[in-house]
Every structure is written in structure tokens, then in C-alpha cells.
Picture (tube, rainbow over the protein chains, first blue to last red):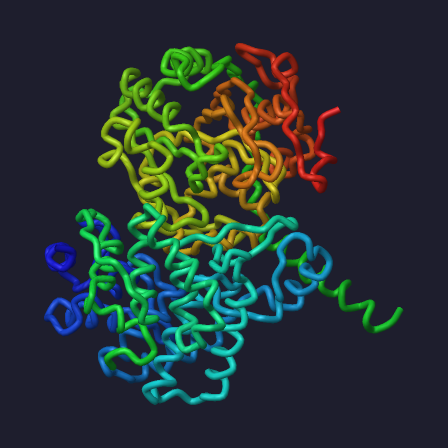
Length: 288
Length: 320
């Protein structure tokens, strides 16, 4: 059902909007392209993404917004899935390797030293921000880790493999440092003003997606939290991300009927979360 | 002086220079100052005649919405049944009813939560789908709307905003009366953080924290004040570690007005906070926070004051 909805809502430029009738954005386009991988709709979507490449590296996030942000990581994943490693790909990887959480800057570390009670993080562990010159957060870091691990796994042509490995290692440490007491993840902090923060289902799923390849024993409390969340959450978005993540960890996921939503991003994620629905494209080893 | 002593001074110098170059341009009106009407209306619970109370408040503030495209912007953050984080759905439903009755051309609801991505899921959990007639057709997720660039938002820096907001004739900031663990209080002005699209700036809208929370509140107010109105849900607010992890606090009030600074200053006085100590209120380029310039309608803030508990680091904000 979700796939037909996606085919029906694709814009004439090959991209997808967040909601039907609006402009194409990279984020829903990439998830829809992954869900329709191998179909002509997916090919037209990839052509749209390629047309968004910026000369300075990265991809513009929509026709209206001519700058790159975290969706650059999703573009790299889509390029690898399509087996394309051209100049835009290399510039994009370079952009991503040079984009780093601002909490590790001199001013960021000073603020953290002066007021450690405000946010309990190790500011030296820098992941990826939503956009340049901002702090690291869980979701953009998870997407970046998936993309970079995919490059490592499949021998992508990048100029600086040492830098790539170092960013992956620190990005993983950053995620583990920010894990909440219950094993899951909030959006980027685990404790604010000395008060523990609760984990959320969707960010727990995303962090586990970024940590694919780590030993399952090390992440048992987190995988348990994700298994608990997928039973308990009523959020369709969280259920979709948990389905994708748990399947990629090889864990059982109960298949349930979903109501067709007008939300295109959600529909694409629900399609990817189906058994054999393409979730493996968001794993380092998946189908490249 | 040792070389290591110079490092923090240099850092302060850099930060100061950055702040100076990123100040909003001075657009303070040069004409005579006008007084601000703020209605403080008793509403003891959510079963009260909220539509009737709101209608009275809008009349007190002489708001004419005939023919206008109205966007109601509630505060939807996340749902926790143990506390009261969001603008209550019944207040939003009453506002829809009243604005339609008053002849608005359209009444939409729009919000872009700060850190949770499942906006529609939060709305459902918070009862919006169930309690607001036609919610699905009225609602826009501002985090995922199409956007347009607004120049000179913070100094020379532009910022993207949702087209739904840029195209509105009137934005009604429907805030929740809450303490805030970074800003002191979150009311109708801070509620405009939800206008910034997550699709461009992420969750949370971290760019605003880098500009400075108070500076960003001032810049958002400068951009949208001319077409704004405030309705603050203070029937049950939040005290302590707001805006998410605090405790419910009954104040039994709805606070309304055209001047968001005056509304928020009035709410602060109701909450037992000194508005002069809330930086974004004193630095707003327009609006009145001094009581001499506010015409209070309905209840007097001092007579309905209920001190909201504050985190230790914010106890200096207490109104004496």
C-alpha cells in the first residue's frame, strides 16, 4: 500500500515532497528512492538527487534551499546503493568528513567546563550536526555513520580513509557517551541540569542503526530498550524506524498492518520497514 | 599577565565581536509610544466556557479578524500524561470556534515541535485530533512545510521560514505558561521557536541556541510582532524544570493581547517572575514590559499571582 502511494505522489521533477502537492525535498525523496529501489520511480528520484549536487560539496536540501545539511549523508548512502561514485560523491564525502559538531570547539569546551551541570556530555567526542557550525545530535550522527561504514564496507573511493575511520570511531563513541540510563537515546543529551532525560523510541532506533557492526552484547540494554519501545510506542514514525533498525540487527519484528498516511516520509519508512522492504539498504553491508 | 590568561579573554573578545555583528538591525519605531491592552481572564478549568472567555478577551483587546487568514500556533512539544507540556487542545478548539465566528477567512493550526519529529503523533497523543474539529485539514507541520528565505534575520544572516507562516495575516501564539530551564520562562514570544523549520535547521533548532536563546526570541519577535496576537494557556501551567520535565501548576487563567511583550511580562508577574530580569523582554525592539504602559483588563496580575517554583539557578528571577 505504501509503495503505490509513493508512486502516486512522486513530483514531476523526480523528487518527493513531505506532503503531496508541495516542493520536492531530499529527505523524503531519498527514503522513497530506497523503498522503490530498482523501479523506474527510484531511478528518476536518483536523477533528481544528482541534480541537487553543489559544487562546494554536499547536496542542496530542496529547490528552495540552496545549502547542504545532514541529508548529505543520506545522499551518499543512495549513491552507494546506485553504484555511482563520481565527483559529486567524492565532494559530498569530503563535505561530510569536514562537518563536525561545534561542541568540541574551544568555546564549546570552555562552556562545558564552566557549567558541567548544564549538559552532561564529553564534548571531545564530536559527531555530526544537523547543519555546519552546530552541535552534534543523535540522528545526523547515525545517518553519517551508516554512510561512512557503507563506504568502508564497499571500498568507496575516498581520498582520506584514515580520517574516515577516525570519524567513525569517534562518532560511535559519541553515541555511546550520550546513551540514557534506560539504554535508549534522547535527541542528543542524556542529562540536563543534573536531571536524567528519558529515551525516545525513534532516536533509539536511529542510534542503533548508526551503531551497526558493534557487538550486540555491548548494546544489549539498548537493543532491549528498542524491543520494548516497538511494543509500547504508538508513534507510527517511531515504529517504522524501530522496524528498520531491529531488522538490520537481525532481531524479530512483528509485522503489523499500518494505516496509509498522507505523510510521504512516514510512508517511505513504513515501506522500508516491511519484511524484505529495503531496510538492508540502510545497513553497511546492504545490497550495494 | 600570562599567555594562558589571554585565551579566555580572546575568546570573550571573539564572542563579543560575533554578538555585535549579529545584532538585529535597529528598527525601533520612531513615533510616539502606544499603550498595550492585556486581558487576564479567569478560567478555572478546561471544562469552562473557553470560547466565551476567549471571545470576551478578544473584544477587550479590540482584535478584528474579519477576512484574515489566521494561523493558530500552539505549543506542542511532546506528550507525557504525568504532566502538562502542551497548549491544551480544548483551548485551541475554542480559539478555532471563536475566530471562525468572528469572520476570519480561514483558521489553520500550525506547529513545528523543537525536538520530536513525529509532529502528528504528538498532536494525536495530546488530544488535538480528537478534540479539534477538522484537525487534519487545518494542520500544517511547520518543520516540513515549504520555505522561503527571509533576509537579515539575525544581523546579516538570513533564515528560512515556512510559507504557511509568511502567508498568514495573523499569527496567534497560543503558548503554555511554563518555566524554562534555559530562558527562565517560555510564553508567547519563545513559542515562536516553533516557526523555524526543522527540515532546514534540525531538531532541536540548534542554530537558535548558537545565536543565543534571548537574541533569537527578540529576532523572531521583530520579524513577526506586527501580525501577531497572543493567547497564553495558564489554566494549568508548568513550574520547576520546564518546559518538559516540570510539574503542573494551576493558575486558572487565560492571558490575551496584541503586544506579545506586554502579555509575557504580565504572565511573568502572575508566575511571580520579575520580567525585567528576562532578557528577551527587556531587549525586544517594540512592546511594553513596564506596568505603567500596560492597560490590564480583567484580573490584576498581583491579585492572581501564584509563584511558580524555579530551578535553583533561576531563583534570582523571583519578583519581590
